[in-house]
Image (cartoon, rainbow, N blue to C red; front, side, top):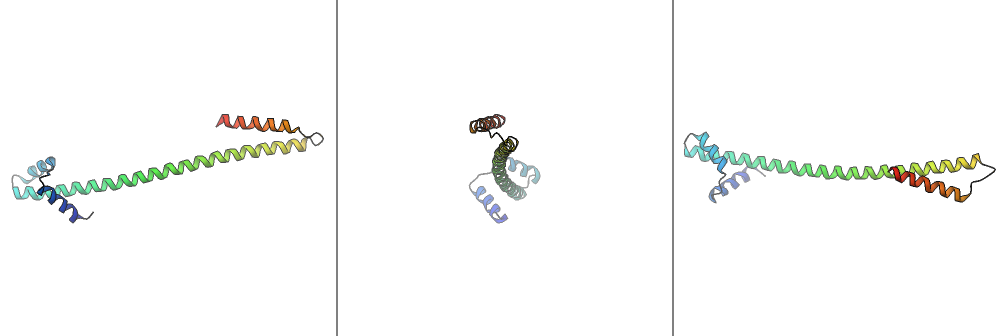
Length: 129
C-alpha cells in the first residue's frame, strides 16, 4: 500500500470520527497545545502506525508460508527415511538368504525357514520404528 493510501485512510477515519485515543494523546503532548500542529502530528503518527501494521501483516504471512513449507519438507524427509529403512532391511534379508545359500550349498534352507526368518526380521524392524 502506498503512502497516499495510508493518508487517505487516516483522513477517512478523521471524517468518521474514528480517532485512536492513544495517538491523539501523544499528538497533544508533542504539539504543546497548538491544535493545527496536533492534527498534523496525529496524521503523521497514525500513518506510521498503519505502515507498521502493514509490515507486520506481510512478515506474518511470509513466516506462515515458511512454516508450512518447512512442515511439508519435514514430512517428505521422514517418508524418505522410512523407505530407506525398509530398503536396508530387505537388502540385509536378501544378503542373509544369499549367504545361507552359498554357505549351505549342500543343504538349501527350507522355504518355511526363510519365511519365518523374514517374518521375524519384519517384526523386529517394526518394533524399533
